[in-house]
Picture 1: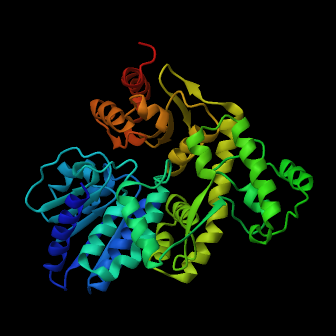
Picture 2: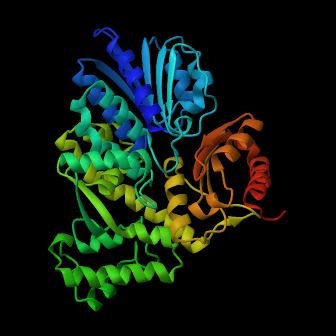
Picture 3: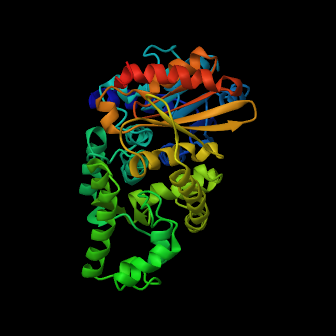
Length: 449
C-alpha cells in the first residue's frame, strides 16, 4: 500500500544521497504533462541537494530513445513516468537506475542495481490513484521535507493524466490534503474555460470539445449575442449571473451530445489553484501538454522549474497547439471513424497528437461502446495510441495488455494502462495488428463472440 511507496521512496533517497556530488544524474521522463512535472520534481529535488542533471523527455521510449541512452556512459539514471515496461532494456545499461512509474509493470523482480517504484506493485491503482509525478513527489519528499512545496506539480501531473475523473483519490488524495493544509493550493468550483477573451476561450475549447461551437466562429458569435455577452470580455470579468448562464448552456450542450455523466462531472467541478504555478492545475497541465506534444519540451520543463519567461512563451505556443487539435477533431467529427466489432480507429497526421485527439473524441464525440485507436504512419513504422473509458474498463477492457500482446507478437512494442495505451509496429503489419487487436478486445469486452 502507500507505506510500501514510502519505504521504496526512502530507499531511492538513500541511493541518491549516497551518490558523489560530482555525479551528473541522467533523468529520463515522458513528454506529456505527467512526465514533464515528474521530471521537474526530480530535477528540482536533485538541484536542491547540489547535483547536476541531464534530462530527456521522450515520446516513445520503446526503441530508439533508450538505444541512444544505452550508448551513454551514465553512473545513475532516474526514470520517471516510465521504465517499468522497459526493464529488460534498462538492465542492459550497466549502471544504477531508479524507476518511478505507474504504468503496468512487466516484472516485479529486478537486478540489484535497479530500484523499481511502481504504484501497481504497491497496491495502488496506477490508472486512477497515483501518477508518475505523484510517485516522483514521494521520492522528493523522502529526500527532504523542503520538497513538500512541489505538491502542486505532483497534482498537476496527476491532473494531466485525467486522474481527477471520478474524484481525486488514493495516493493523490494524500498529497492533495497535505497541499491544502500547507496552503500550497486553494480550491474553488468553476468551469474549464480560459483564454485571452471569451471568444478565444470558446473557439479554442478542445477538452471539453463542444460540437458545433468549438472552432466555429459563426456559432460562437450567435451564442454570445443570445446570452448578451461581449466576445472581447475576459472570463474573470463576467459576473455570477453571466457565468451561470454560460455554464448552463455549455453543460446542456454536452448532455444533448450524449456525454457520459463521469465526464460531465469534470466540466464544472472543484478546482485547485496554485499561486506558485500562476494558475489552476488543469490549466497548468494543458500548458505542459501543449509544450511537450507541440515540440517544445524544453520550455515545458523550464516552466516546471519556475522560469517566468518560459511560462509566457508556453501560453503563446498553446494557441497554435490547440488549433492543430481542433483541425483534426473537426475533420474526425465530419468524416467519422472506421469500425471493427470491438474497436474503432482513425488515421492522424501527428503521432504526438493521436492519443490526445483519441481521448477527446472518446469523451465528447463518440459513444462509450468501443475503444478508439489512432494510427500514425511514420517512415517504416506505425504509431498507435489507444483510448477507452471507465465504462469499458469496468466491463473488462485492458488496452495496455492488449496492445502489448499484439505488438509483441508482431515484433513491435506496446503497453500502458487499461484505459490508455500505445504501441509501435512495422508499417507493413497494420492489417494484422488491427485484426489481432480486434480479436483480443472482443474477448475483453465481450462483443462479437
